[in-house]
Amino acid sequence: MRKKSGTKHGNCHENGRNGSEKLVFYIRKYALLLLIGGSGYGMIELLWRGRTHWSMLLAGGLAFIFFSVIAEGLDGVPLLFKAYLGATGVIIIEFLFGVVFNIILGMNVWDYSDLPFNLLGQICPLFAAFWFVLSMIFIPIAQLVNSILRRLSRANLPAVRTKSGS
Image (cartoon, rainbow, N blue to C red):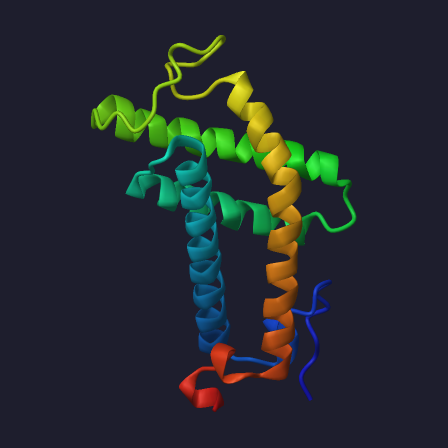
């Protein structure tokens, strides 16, 4: 009989899966989170600015993966603190993407140079506050996605099984 790993959230480790099944599960999980986050970020940009850039889809996907990690890893921690961490993560992602795509590659995806207290025109307090509010919305959504994926994993549905598990 296999011993349960004792993980708090009942993820695929408790289902007695082998290493390759776990790997496939996590690849699918993070690909789905990347897709959800990229789509969401892109929609926000389209609504806010009327346009987006492919790099923002990647940034949004990475941000949503970070929200998922926060939601799962900090269960029981107040949402305000999670939102602070989430906003900080998005600002770091935005800054790094801004330096690469706007400054180094000269793509001019965005420019906050006209906003007060900006850092190299890539991040500013106004959008940090914006991401704090959005983190309060998207971290619970990421938590819901995590919960759904755990339930699917436990049910061994084809969407989360490998060929060897079918």
